[in-house]
Image 1 (spheres, rainbow, N blue to C red):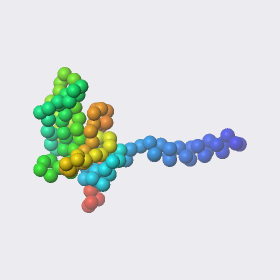
Image 2: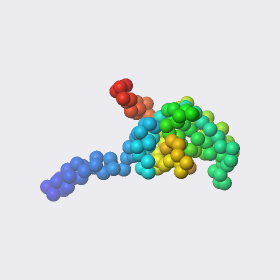
Image 3: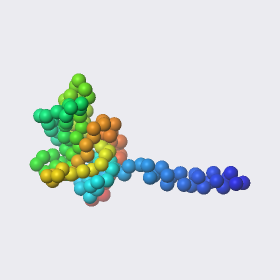
Image 4: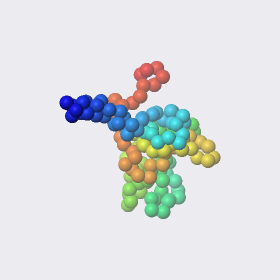
Length: 139
C-alpha cells in the first residue's frame, strides 16, 4: 500500500518537475520584456547581415533579424557558419524560415534591439508547425 501511495504522489509531481526544465517560448516582439532571462524566442528570419570581421575559432558572425527587418528590427540572434562553409551556410540554413533560438536575452551597451548570441548551433531549432503564438487579435 505504501508503494502505491508513493507511486501516485510521484506521478502527480512529475508534470511539475518536467515543466520547470522546459524553456518558455516567446515572440520576437516580447523579447524586450525578458532581458537577462534564458528563454526561447521564436519568429521568422526576415533579414541577414554578415559581419566583415571574423572571430577567432568561429569565423564571421551572421545576424538574423526575426519578424521585422532593418531599419526597425525588434529582435535578432547571432550565429556562425560551420567550419569550411562559413557564413553562407548559416544564411542558407535559416533565411526565410521560422525558428526558435534559445539563450540569454541581452542588449548591446549602445542600445538597439535585444538579441541572443547562439555560439552553439544546437540553440537554434526550426519552429514546429502549429507552435506559433497567436497575435493580439487571437489569430
